[in-house]
Length: 588
Image (cartoon, rainbow, N blue to C red; front, top):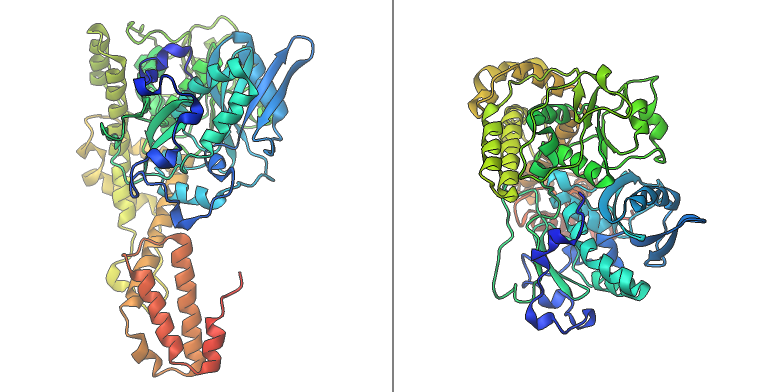
């Protein structure tokens, strides 16, 4: 997401009177002003012992500053913390160079992570990923970079896709840094290293350079389309900024230039089609790409996407070659060179300057790709794609009426986000219902046999369910839903979604099997076993225990403790020499 100028954070940056005369060092650490333990507490999951800079690294990989020199070019001048390793310096310099030519601007881009980089807090990232909603899963291949470009560029590098949060953070840090330089950056990093780790479900108060930000990290258990951030006069007395979202962009503002094609764009993103956005600036490019991949939420966009893509990206040749079909990826570009290089791509969105959401957008027809010229092409959607579903005129009229009545942009954004949410849910519910039917019955699970496998996904069987239990039950839209499903089942988004669901269901089967074992009378059973068979049983139970703890199987509270007690009781029934062997911790 891109935010330009300080105005957009203006209302939020009103500091309370009792903080006016204090500097950053007088702000209490986050742990001291957070909510009590529980939601918003500061105890780390699993009793993790955190070392210096671990808290910082839970949020950011590093912060760096890129300087511009007309004679020497651009170079990374500062990396903080100083021990941080950054192998992508040339790419970062090239990315920020073009932004520096544009003046003050703020945007984000992603790049492929080096294979030799390891997270300094991988155990925590696993916890974050497990409880995060699909759209906030940590990407193990790509890093997020957030840039504010002035005379220098201040760059935040993180694995976390908290776009809105990091842009707000830059709004606070950048003016202070460009005035006070590196000592100010060191103070900011020390503030961040006192923050609690970003565990999903917690309400966090985060002090940074004399300002206190209040956020909540969403979880996969939240109801889609709702905000769980609660306001409390007592806990908010020191809060300067309350962010209602850490990752969502303003959909209405981003889609305003292509307002009349939002439903077709939803289909293209849903199907994982190769899509390129040609924009006049990195800010508008990154905003539009982020809006596109988020429009199918709560379904995760499983292909690659690059909010700001340049000729210096390592994948430039791979994505621009004409010897093979374009990959399933959404690219955002600004260089006019791409109008010719990517002319063979099947779907191109060309946008002009983003108008204020209070102005009426002009209705534009979908244009043929052959009409896309290198420099003088008008804004519009260039594609030969024919949508499967009929256009929803009601949502267009509702949003147009809002523009005429000067409805607030936040309200327009909420309407559009709700529309996309309901459309995606109508599409995915029949798939969820069919996949749930692939789960074996609980009565077929025996404690003394391996859990039965999931039944296979058979496309023809799924299609048969659509006649009586299809999207027509929840959506007013007409059209070729069957054709849309057939296309979707071949897409990367279906593959990613089904892999995730199958993994969840497999873990559920393992959990049910574990609970069935815990209900058995193991003491009575081992009376019929030889010592060898009993030892074998203990080893298998230990494996189940390890699996339950490692994979965090969704078992009922107390199940793991009950299994551990069963194992101990079985071991106690064995001779002393075998007890000594089985009590030894297993080597990894």
